[in-house]
Length: 387
Ligand SMILES: Cc1cc2nc3c(=O)[nH]c(=O)nc-3n(C[C@H](O)[C@H](O)[C@H](O)COP(=O)(O)OP(=O)(O)OC[C@H]3O[C@@H](n4cnc5c(N)ncnc54)[C@H](O)[C@@H]3O)c2cc1C
Image 1 (cartoon, rainbow, N blue to C red):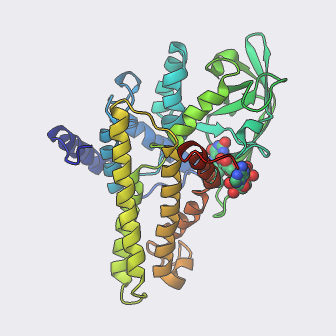
Image 2 (cartoon, protein in one colour):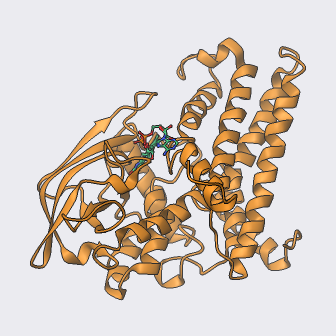
């Protein structure tokens, strides 16, 4: 891995920085989980990004990207977080389904879905989990019955992020009723406003409706909406999960920027807190940098033709634990102030830390719980026997 940036990479960073400075909204956008208005404000931001061809810089030019490599993507993310740009409402589509579609989609499917996804015209939710199939995803019971040129979907999905306001969902369904476990599953898309789909919001710990249950009752979709071969949904989903846990879901810039804010918070309050807090701050800063270096190394290896395997699980555990530690340290610096309501006159940046802390608690659960990631590491990296 080369630790020095090339002149081209530096020029790319300067271009990204200048664009962000000119376009990032001055005032934070309202949350995309709390209201339709906030969701639509984020959709407009996705459109703006896409118009500047910054929506997904690694995507091919034909789909609105720049055809750039993973190191350039990391540089872009650093500039994105540096500028304090909005969270990506489009994440499920562009980071998860997008790469999977490019690998497994037919030319017609790519033409139909990718540009609309990149522009934010169609925002996607991921409908995999079910009440009895979260960690044990192969226990999926929702069905897709083939009927001529259509599938008829029935079942019950849960914990589907963004589904309350999103346009489409990609779901995992049992297309062979006799099948068990990983076999006989298909990955199928459905519009969330199709007849027979009912979306039931679930409030999060902060009261916002970040995710939803989805009830499907004889929902008819064209067979065109199946990604990959019938019955091959499991291996396609595992490819998506690799993208999710591996590089794209949480770029290091997110944690490096949070660590920078943590230093500023500590400096503003260092006279009021225990001296040992300094060690916790330093640990978070070092961990964020270590994560960044490790992701740069992974990106370099992928660009040289390597694969990402079980190390995606190592990354996922590392960033989720780092996020919690970092936010706990911030709350310990804030002390009783951490409980101030966002609207309180003295609240300042406090609400952001509290929101960040609440969200960090979900890190060890979503994208496959950390216990499951540890099982994967034990079995596939360390060669230990199955528990
Ligand atoms: C913020 C957030 C967003 C999410 N977004 C989505 C989304 O958009 N789409 C979607 O489909 N899902 C989503 N999920 C769901 C998420 O993928 C599941 O919550 C997760 O996979 C765990 O499944 P579960 O909740 O059914 O818990 P369970 O599987 O019931 O697990 C409960 C506990 O038991 C542990 N456990 C279970 N099996 C084992 C085992 N074999 N060995 C050791 N420990 C085990 C788990 O690690 C966990 O600690 C989201 C979850 C959260 C928190």
